[in-house]
Amino acid sequence: MRRRPTVLHYSADDRPVPAPIQGWLESKDLDVLRYNKVADVEAVALRNPPTLVLIDGDGGRSGGLGLCRALKNDAFTSVAPVAVIVTDHASDQVGAWFEAGADEVVTSVFDPSEQTARLSGLLRRTERFVSVHPSTRLPGTNAIERAIRDRLERDEMFAVCYADLDHFKEYNDRYSYRDGDRIIFLLSRILSDVVRGLCQHAGFVGHIGGDDFIMVLPLEPVRAV
Image (cartoon, rainbow, N blue to C red):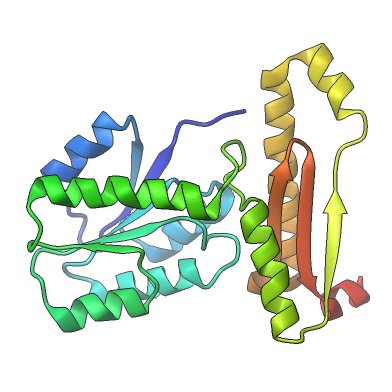
């Protein structure tokens, strides 16, 4: 089941999205869900990976920095691009946001047209380099290869598991592509929940395509099952 692209906006002080960026979001047909609690953003991002996370960098900055780090340090949410919006440009603060993992920092140095152009470029880069699957928003083949390669380079002990659905083509042909897409999305959530339950942030779930998924897990949690 394909879902309308969603943007999560975090502002500790409940400030709205700046008007130029709000106009850009509407032009892209992006739904915006607004939150003032870090835990709420993390919970929603885990259940339904968003197209973009916007963080209000003015006020409540420590909470925003922590949210950025948490999203980027979690294998399940790190694929979602994070952009920070701040009124004033201060080099040390911009550096702190990038150190926390932000993919883009939009400040007053850029005029409104450049701000929205930077966000458009961020979305294009994400689709090109992260290659998330449009149905599940899980990492694709490039990210799967990188997850395995990184563990090999660190000389870690880990397990790679493959999952698919028996007779999926027959189901898809009989009940329609839309129902098949819904089943794929449900399977992606089940696999993500299982892997996260086993090893929290250390696990990885990727979507090769169709009904084919790859899971990469530390060896110890797998041995204990």
